[in-house]
Image 1 (cartoon, helix red, strand yellow):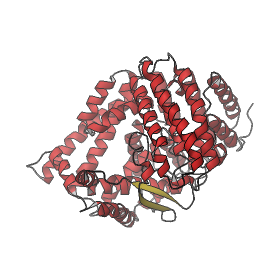
Image 2 (image 1 turned 120 degrees about the vertical axis):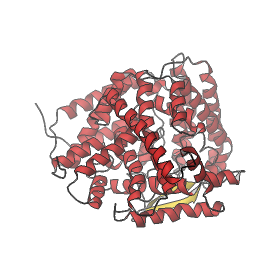
Image 3 (image 1 turned 30 degrees about the vertical axis):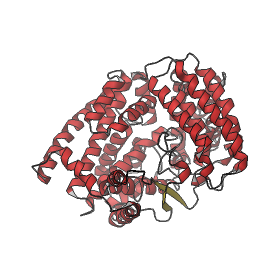
Image 4 (image 1 turned 180 degrees about the horizontal axis):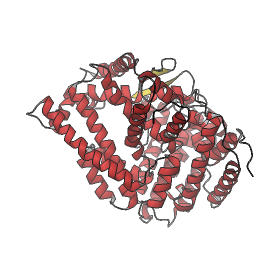
Length: 539
């Protein structure tokens, strides 16, 4: 017997999620959990599974709602809970040392970011005081439990860096108070002890296996293909784009190779660091102006470009510290902050790293202007409550992974969309965008082949180097792939999904993009079904 869907189930679902993931609550803007750290005791997984089963039973007994927002909320809760249950039984986060280091680190950092101003001092001190108990429980839980060596090294790196931050750079925060000092010192000791305790942890294969990956792709991303089918698509695209890049390079300059042309882009940059800083906003403004006929830009919600605060400059490198972070959907305020990393000792390296092509494509388009910034702003008005917060950037990634095909798909798609604004990109920059697209197809292959057991970590790293990833990024990328299956395939498959939808859209270009973003943070495949249901698509 089915019953009518109760929208209050969203409140119960979020209460469940935040009980086991209170740091997510802080990032989402719910302040009620700011003093808490995640439970990690021997009964945690048993208690979590019991709550999941209760919520699933109530959701599965409910009828599909007629209301769009309720329908998407129900669907996301079912998908997330089913995947959480499978993960708790077969791939529990409590067996990953980097989950503990990330949650512990960002339990503190999340309260120090501009989005949390003014600082909730009592909550911060409570979390600092809770770090020792949390990490002791983590060490006990992990004792003798195999984990991939890459996960262990990441956890040790994060814990060591966080200890250093708590001993010194936290004092540079503009709201630092004397009563933080002793709790911070004790938390630093706890991070160091945790890092040391991982020295003897045995190794493990990080692959999740085909059954797990298949369910993730079907349930979470809504993808109508198997992992092997996705590999076939990505392999064909990877080869095709390699040929396209060679042809584009010949058209630009027959005397230079693809690599030579792309390398030369680093030489085109502003004259000094202040001019680099100004270029972020300059290109943001130009992207908004030139893209306005393609997508309505978000100008009602501010994006404040700032030099990164001194307290975060060291810690930002070893942690998953984003220079642009989605604002807290439940408490978004009037705008978001975009950090610009200041130059180090090598000013020339800073200038080359912030060359015009990279600032334009990655910072001012992908993340700023009509990219993530516009997308996140539009999500605040989505009919689905969960679609307003699903794409929140948390300690390890998106709060709800299923939102990624739209979120990352859009940000990569919009890079190419600005090619439709005449003169915005140079031919060399368009070649760079083709390399980005090819690397995203390469990421599909690593994401899937690593978890199917087709490739080892070393083979995956070798392939990333072949695909043109910066050498310094390769190991970190593969470790992240190994920890978070399905988190990299969503970029290229998301772009391809948006392109396919646009071809079927009955209206104009501006209407398509604005309507697409109105759904908020939801799997692209579900948005496609809703567009079809509403009669917006051609067959």
